[in-house]
Length: 113
Length: 111
Image 1: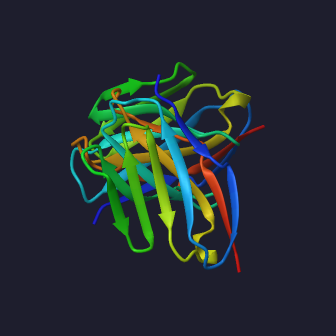
Image 2: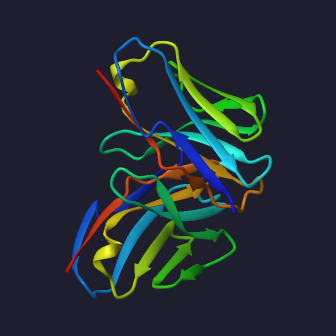
């Protein structure tokens, strides 16, 4: 069966520090991968998605970036965090076809001080 | 720009009651609609996926319907239990081929 792992579960970082959140998927090949952010009291916002290694699409301009160095690994990064980057970050995967559901990880709670 | 709206934002019901959660969307070119459950501080659990060619999907006590012409979906929960308490999110895949989420309905089932 397929599983998705995100880490860390919780992170507290000072403003201006770098960020690296990692997501890996097991039990499937060539998945579509997604990064979402859920801010307090708001819905989920798609940040990045990837249909293959090295292929990243950005949905929202910001100081975050994403990379996909391996087929089942998706990394969310920042060189200098802002206060507005606080939130709950969720990674998801889906099979390639349009009619497949997305499956989510347990999320990372990021607090910027 | 596609938008997804969920009303009400919060709902509290006594245990055993049947209930309906509502979701409306603006993009008529819908590919599918997905209902999720989110427990506090946790990720999303996929409950049901309805393809654009379907009118409803059922899983246990859950039934989701889709009416493309009116831009609406409902999630019906039968015989609600305290363990059903969570935030329920609907999300549609539209012409942009990406999921657009509603803000969710926070459900509390009182024992």
